[in-house]
Image (tube, rainbow, N blue to C red; front, side, top):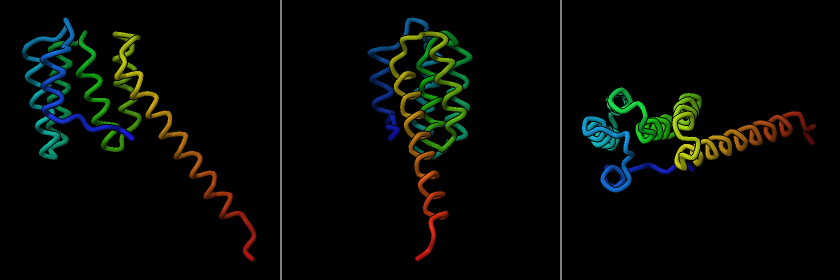
Length: 126
């Protein structure tokens, strides 16, 4: 299950663990993106996270946040893309590694459920 990051949790991350590559502008976009997601304004959250990436392209946090947003909104291919970009910047990025693992598990679960459903459909009716 993918965990949702609240605006308060994001603010703590920004204040306490922010990357040296982060900029004040990037941090502002991250905070506003978390608020937009809380309001349910996903397009605005995506745009704000993309802006954060533009201002701080070497900071993995905006990539991780955008990937998580895509994962939470049912877009695993885009989520994987942004987790992979974060891992290219920092191969030790824990959030990206965890995100990829969660995407892999969800994909395996989906494939297993599909295979079981196909087997049930093919089984003879008694």
